[in-house]
Image 1 (cartoon, helix red, strand yellow):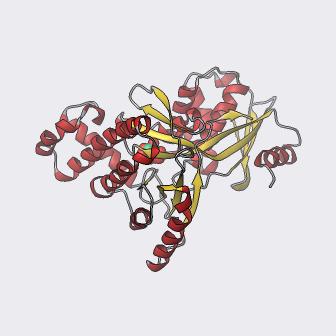
Image 2 (spheres, protein in one colour):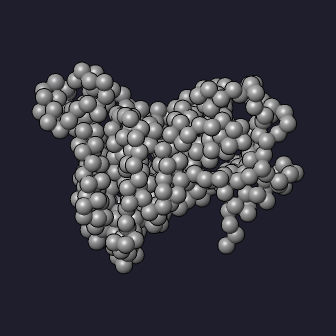
Image 3 (cartoon, rainbow, N blue to C red):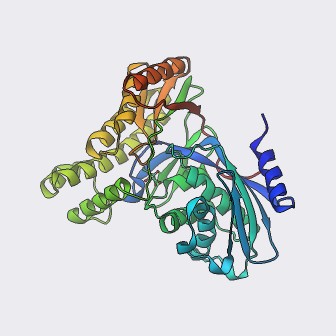
Amino acid sequence: MTDIRDDVRETFTELYGAEPDGLWSAPGRVNLIGEHTDYNEGFVLPFAINRRTVLALQARDDRRLRVASAFADEVVEIDLDELVPELLHGWSAYPLGVAWALGQFGADLAAMPGVDVYLESTVPIGAGLSSSAAIESSMALALNDVWQLGFDRPTLAKVGQLAENRVVGAPTGIMDQSASLLGQKDSAVFLDCRSLDAEVIALGFAEAGLELLIIDTGVSHDHATGGYADRRASCEKGAKALGVESLRDVSIDDLPRAKDVLDDETFRRVRHVVTENQRVLDVVRTLREQGATAIGQLLDASHVSMRDDFEISVPELDLAVETAQANGALGARMTGGGFGGAAIALIPSDGVSRVQVAIDGAFAEHGYGQPTMFSVTASDGAARE
Ligand code: GLA
């Protein structure tokens, strides 16, 4: 099998007629637990996966930015002086949006040279595995190096988030870019989205004889439109009605009072966030004290909360989760923003194929499209290759 890095280097050279200055890469992520908690200043526990964007870049002697990728047959060009969110569209909004966002964080774009970029990715698109954060993080790291900006990784994560929010137009939180930039092999990133303190937590899946299976339902979702922004708005409404800055300030003990104050729907949105924050803390504690085999019920409870309280699941995700649970998974839940995308299941390694066969069968029986399933391992974050 050819290494994607060789492909990227070769295609860059064919396209631009010169060798790149270097290669950078960044992974997608899967969220183990802590969903829709990041923009509520809560806790998340994602990990970087063994699927990456690889990017080749060369500095130019003028002010042109040129980006190309395996996603599209076009080379998108813009001058650094013209770089504004309104002019950026399609896939190129991710890398070019990062260049713009670096300027918002204080990089003196007027003094920077243009760059040529080519990228490819093994992170599946639309599966809820943050293919977009993988592009943003690889571009942020590459420009930080080549432009010698000296930003630290937490700042580069914020840069990627700003590109996503302002250029792509998705009102997402800080989780995805943080996982992609801060991830470490065999570990998850326990992130406090209020202080942005991050701690690396050993997962120990392989030692415990476990695999984490991704079940990509193929149901597409788009966080720049619809449900994601609605949920975020409900959380803000709940926080306001409860007189707190964010739902991070609401504890489980506060829920009875919240029930009296809020309408039923807003209350259930709030209850999801508050209980999910607690589940993240419980998973971290359980991983430390008892190991990965003991976290299954917390994953299951997270799914129920997203299905019934936050209402971001879809029938295909519910079926994937229930079928995995009924066929030997220790725990399962939908992962990511919801309304489609993927579920995860934590399964003893020798039982993975049984779960896969059962899910394939259940999807066929319901007349759903065939899901894509593969195991992921926790990997290192963004790096210069
Ligand atoms: C998407 C967003 C994240 C986070 C999750 C839900 O993946 O990009 O910031 O809000 O949804 O947990």
